[in-house]
Image 1 (cartoon, rainbow, N blue to C red):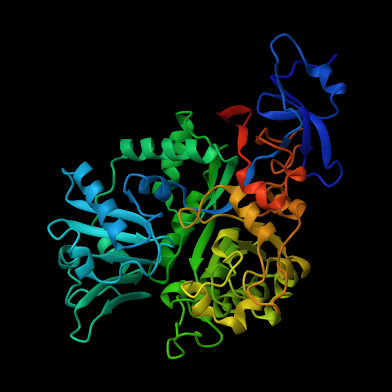
Image 2: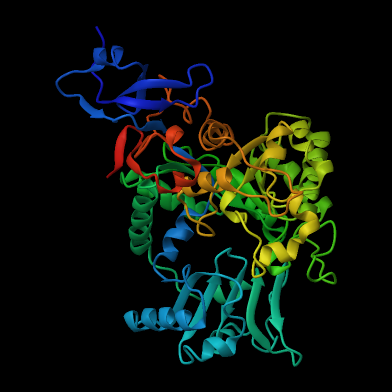
Length: 530
C-alpha cells in the first residue's frame, strides 16, 4: 500500500539530472519531497482522492533552475527605481528619467538602473535632463555610475575634496572637476546617500521580485553580495512564509574591513534555514573590462596605457582566504580579467599549501578571459568555474561592443571559454548575475547553444543541451554543497521542480528562448502557475 501523494505530474518527458536514471515519464510529490520518479503506469499507485494530478502533455519536467550568481535583494530594491535597460539614446534616457521624476515628485532623489555604456558620459548631460534634483544612474553591470552636479556636490566629490579610496575612480577633467562618471567603489560615495526603502517596502519589493523570478523556473539562487542584515531580511521573510526561492548568502569581504567581516561571516554561517542560509564569503579580485578595472595579464587592446592593479594583492588575499578556509567557509571570488583569474587560483593554491587540501569547493566567478596555462588548474585545485552566458556577445562582432574592443581579437579565443573549461575537467556552473542580465535561465541556455564564433579561427565554445541543464541543476547544487538535497528529481530529494511549455529536447535551439514555465514548485509548494 502506497501513501497518497499530494501532487503528481504525469505524461511528461522528465529530465531528472540523475546520471543513473536520466529520464522518466512521471513524478510524485508528498509534502516537500519527491517520493516517486518513474513511468506513467506505476505512478498511479500514488494517486488518491486528494491527489492533484497534472497532465504534462509531453512537455519537459525537470529540477528547478539554480542560478549560481545573483543579486536578489538589491535587484528587487532596484525595481523601485527607473528602469533603463531598454534605453538606447539620450532622448529615451531623458524621457525615462523625467517620467519617473514626475511619478515620484515627493522624493529628492531620482535613481535609475541598468543603462548600457556609451549613452551618457557627463554630469552636464544629466543636468540637462534633471538639474534641480539629486540624480544618480547605474550601469547594467553595477561597476560604473553617473551622477548630476547636484548629487556630486552633495557627496562632496565634485572638486576632489572628499575622494573615496581603495579601488575607486572618480573620473575628472583637466581642471580636476568630476565629470560625473564613477567607477567601482567610488559609486558608493553617491549611492550611499540614496535613502534605502524601509523594511516594509523592502519586503514588498522582495516579494514582487521573487514572483517574477519564480515565473522563469528559478527555484534557488546563490547571492553574490550580502551581510547579516540582508540575510536577516530573508530569514524574516522565511519565518513569515513569504520566501519563494532558496537563497545562499555570502558575506562580502573587502580589504579595509576583512577582519571584522570574518566575524560576521562566521555568524551568518550559523543561519541554516530551509530557504535562507549563510556559510560563504565573497571577494572582488578586480572590476570589469568595460570600465578598465579588470586585472589583465596584458594591456587592454583599445587603451594599452591603462593598467588595473586589482583589488587584492596576492599576499593579502592569501592571508584572508586562508583564514576563511580554516573556518570552513566557501569562497567566491569575482574575477573577470585573466590576471584576476590567475591571482585567484594562485591564492587558492597557496591556501591549500597552508591549510591542506579539503573539499572546499571554492569558486571563481565570471572567468570572462582565461590564459590557457590556467585552464587545467581548476580541476587540479578542485575549484569551480561559475560563469554567466548572457555576459558573452552571442553571434556578431559589433564595432560598438565595448567589451569586445577592450579585450581585443587576440584574446577572443580565450573568452567565455565554456567548452574548453568543461573539457579541462572543471566543474562548470551557470548564472545570470541579475540585475546585470536577465534572470530568465532559458535565455542563458539559448545563448550557450547558439553562440557563434566571433572570428573564423575562434574555437567553438558551445555545450550540449544536457550539459547546460546539468550545470543549472545537479552541478549547481554541488556548487553549494546541496547535491544530496536538490538539483535532481530523485526520491527523497526536495520537491523543487519546473514544468516547461514544451519538450525542450525536441525544440530547435534557436527557439528555446521562447519556452516558458507552466508551473514552478519550491519545497512542494506551487509558487508559479501559468
